[in-house]
Image (cartoon, rainbow, N blue to C red; front, side, top):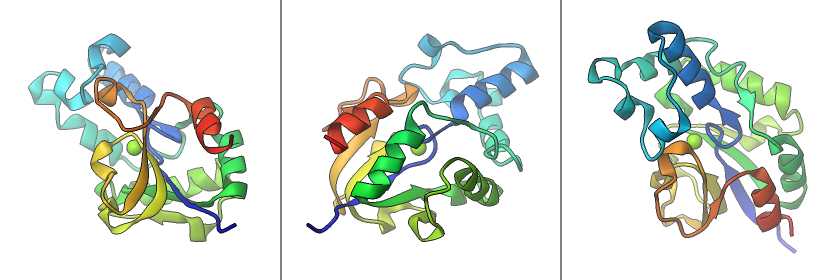
Length: 177
Ligand SMILES: [Mg+2]
């Protein structure tokens, strides 16, 4: 049978930038935001308005994306998805141009079974289509995506989703069953 195509997002799905963003903010301003404080919101909406621009600065700092924590169980499940699907990692990395090499090196380190042909560091994700997409931003779910799976992250917890997964174990249940 023809393999289905599957697009997987990096940030807040494979990688955890939120823990590091919170740590950098705490380093600079002495305040650590709790899960409750950031539920349903983007970090820039939670901090004082004068600090809202900082996150863009943090995210575009060379090296920021290089040592992000890998989401729990992501490696094991991605290995199996790689066998079963036409798997592509798609990240709107152009928003932070300095992230490009870091993201590639990070993938090579943690997901060495993913070849360069399967990696798409792009601008808008409107350009890509697939049978299935896993992403934490529903804005990336357009008509070219048949099955849209929202990966839970702090900012989307109150959002309605056609389909939602809370972690990689649930991804495995849905797509490897
Ligand atoms: Mg994301």
